[in-house]
Image 1 (cartoon, one colour):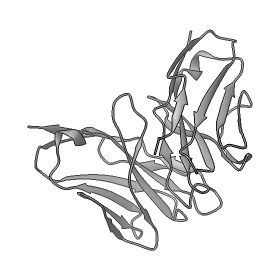
Image 2 (tube, chains in turn cyan, purple):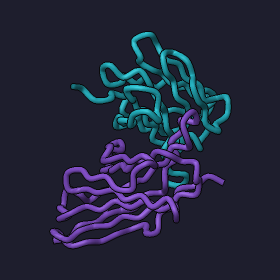
Image 3 (cartoon, helix red, strand yellow):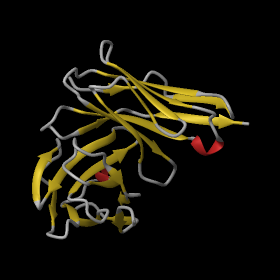
Image 4 (cartoon, one colour):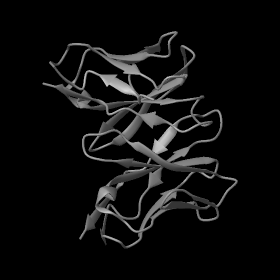
Length: 114
Length: 113
């Protein structure tokens, strides 16, 4: 069974631009969560989607948004990029809503903002 | 506030020895805990989980212990191998319905021959 797939693997953007990251969950998984990982802040929760609905949201500004499609694939978007948005963005899927089954992570998208 | 912390940022062990990675959590309402292993260039990999109605759970070469009285979680790795070298994170779920995993800062495990 294929794991969580994130594309692209690496991305370089300029301040002010926007970016869209993609995540394909493990087949059959209905929940997708997004996390931001930085050396200074560690792993921080962005949001979770289940059956195309956002179930939970972390403490990030509105520039960070996401969505989930009917096939459970998810995208997250960051608008008006700032230097501080440089991070590893991790997507995780779970069979059910998180809390009922463990999260399985992809290898992330490394975003660099210059 | 909510926090999950680790006692040691770096743990060095000799190959073949047992490793113990500790984690303290602050929210007594947390009822689900997970340990993850993250190798360089990869995402966190699920190792083992435990719910608050248990105090011990065993997997292959790993054991998680939960002490709710002192809000402490530990991961024990038996016969540590070079492939175990990674950063280990504990994570807590802030109760059913909250559905937000809070991760600790991580402990780097270094295995030397």
